[in-house]
Length: 413
Image (cartoon, rainbow, N blue to C red; front, side, top):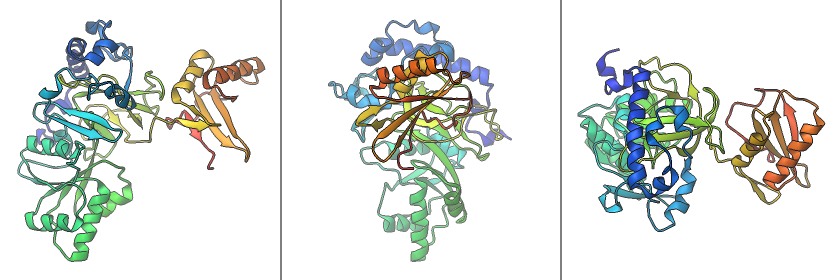
């Protein structure tokens, strides 16, 4: 490996040095958020920021969920009081479904996508055909800012208009593509149908949806190297794929935790849980921001030489709220059941239907078995917490699937 293989030296620094620098930045950020962001002033106002020097200390700060933003922003402040600057001092404001409003602050590559593009092979002097949306949502601007930081020209194609997309690629001859992988496939097939040469495309950085191996193979059959970026409208780039293709490497400006759905409690390394992100930036300092996505940490470092944490990739949604007999059951309620009984290591609600009514079973990992007294106590807790009848069933420790699910709706099955 040479320096040319990496965007900068941050990608290959000692993990302990990275951790120290991130938490030094976090202490400063927490102090600024306590002073200038009304939401965080309330949420973490009593916390001594200088003590948040490691992950154990960080885990004491309450989670802010992506799903909270709608209610926070409905209280009169379009950004929910999460920014440290006034709305007028931001660079851009976007709208995502919900609706929720997303901020863009100032600074080069504010979204952190240059690193992801670079890992996909994009370099200075490339022309990037950008098919992410420029309408309302930040995706188009997000990738454009990263390309600008690399020194690329950008064709802001946006979504749709496949015929015009093909014509533009034929005429301008861009070397790189960014957008969803499924739309890239559509463009490639349309160009073949029209006998238009778009072979200038040699690399792609795709996101916004899954990239199944079969779809990647179809794209790469056209001679296009296809890498991935995992990003969100609130955080920008979260993780990206390198040539090693063994998981997604976390961006250098983030502290990423994996927590048990419905809680803020970090899970052991390798266990599937919800992705929670703290981003080190001054104007929109999201702290312990729960994305609603499931993933897991891969052990060890990437064979490509980058030393940061790796995520397996998107593994589903953490918000598994399910309606049972007309009542919603939430992951937080499952967590509360576990919390009230120290004998339970993990629990999973399974909802079935017997043809007449819903049946709720709570599978509990525990060393105990055939303990009628404990079963009755847990059943009472289920009724108290969920306001529904449920039956506790004991299973062996570590026997529940490692898929991040705490509520399984098996009624269709």
